[in-house]
Length: 308
Length: 320
Image 1 (cartoon, rainbow over the protein chains, first blue to last red):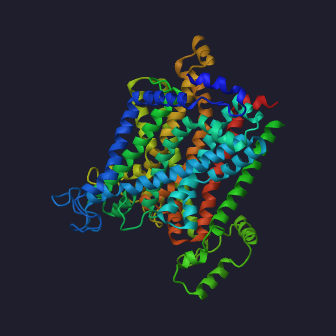
Image 2 (spheres, each protein chain N blue to C red; image 1 turned 45 degrees about the vertical axis):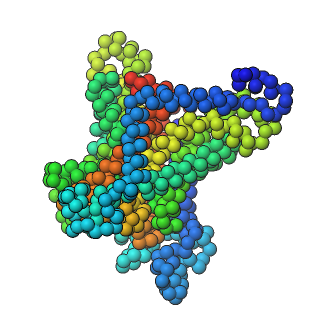
Image 3 (spheres, chains in turn yellow, orange; image 1 turned 60 degrees about the horizontal axis):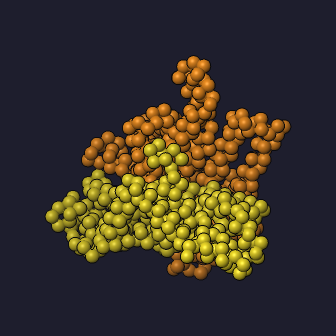
């Protein structure tokens, strides 16, 4: 029995009409989108890079030659047989600290992005679905929050609530939420006037259920792309905060913090700065490439010209 | 006249936004959980000291009344006393730095805007060539990178073993004229330029391509206008309009970008001042700087809106 038949048979039975594409068809769409995305060279490079760096972050601590807080030499030694990438500002092994320093980058930026997406999607869908005055007021207020450059807004929150790692992640989430809400609102506005929404309303389906079961499933594609873009920004912002001294605190091993600790020795021992910088750079590039590949697959950007 | 009314309406909205921005700044530093006095003095402060500081900060008065006093003083240029160091007035702490930052941002804007608009237009003309593809890859990569990563890459390139050309830190000597320390600006300006360049290049490229495909360009070419004149008189002026908003956004972004870049290069501006103030929990300075930085955005946005209204013929005539 095809999904189409089911829909037809269910019509006389009352409010339980599947008015969106049934789950099976939606899943098939996702598989084909994923295939189209994978066919693009940029997505392949992105995924491979991402997996490699994730692997380093997850499995690095198991293969690290030393403990991240162990002193293995003098300060700022160039690479040698004891310390393959040299030593840092306190004489600890740079390679070990790089292998340990990725976990916090991933966990904090993923937390920030997931929480920010949840906040932003709820706000954006709420604004778009409320229409008129509520929409206008909510979006104006979010505009005010967007007047602050991202990093300034995060610093403002941090100055009030403190610099614990989870607070940093939440601050980044709150700072990204208005920007995500704007995208979620735009995506919702496109479908909010469609017949299947009006039909659900006419049948008396509660608003929150329409949002959850009708609106949300239909904005997942743009939201996945937004998730990728926001993840890249979160990684950059959280690493920047660590770099400014507001993220992880010493003696934690964290790529952003390593850059901050070792930059005074950049002329004597560049590896202690260059390697963590390279890791963050490759990670943000990988995430952007994946998001870009997915975006192209979904909205069908012309592969050759790149014109949107 | 509807045009004036439209502009006045935008200005009014800008003022409302500024007011709300000030409310956000004030309440974030006053009403969020956590007592500022404890936060400033640390957990081991004596109750007596805490009470003194609370009195100095006016924490005994209701929040709304404190906001009134604060914004009133702010409007008259009195930003309060800094809590760190020698309790100087905030205006003394940030005055000179504000000037330094403005200098840095203006230099970066002067370099990056014409450069990126030029690259954008040129790649649109050379669309689908190897050069266009190369520029696209470079801008995509650059736009993915956080600004401090770009800054450190720049330092690694130009200030370490590779090419030891420029100072890795940009301390300004206040007793020397700026013109004698221009080398200090090279790396920060380069970093900021590389950070805003990708977006402007991509916007300018996209809008130029769109304009070049329009009928009036074909018309101009058909009637035999030389290609350089087609570009100068018809294509570029029309392509710039949609890029204005985006460029304003990027310039406003510079106001935030300087936080990390100034800190990285130890440049004495308001960005590095904000980092210090947050580290010291120097709330009066944080309030002043956050308000200034958000105002820059509001003003640039307003300016871009007005400029767009003024130079878009459709908007001008469509209102009548």
